[in-house]
Image (tube, rainbow, N blue to C red; front, side, top):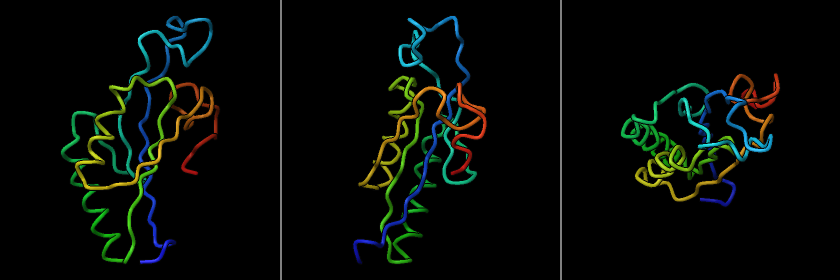
Length: 129
């Protein structure tokens, strides 16, 4: 296996819309109580609720095995809104670990920069790119 033989799988933790009345000092990263996740999206279309982590583990194992069949190793790119509480992200990190995937890269969207339609993202930013 060469260094370049890496398959990256994107996992998005989609946030619920923010309630402006819970902001502290107008800063979305200081959102009172933290943000909440709506769902977890794997790749281009598989969706999971945070209560479905066993199903997520199964999906990740399938992806890992498919990558291995092609001579690749899998890495996860976990994208989440910067204001989400850690307890909304930790189950996904645990699922990645349980699936036996050893490389997990974290990306935190800043307010107004996440996928459109979630949280406070600007229209067209992060739409499957």
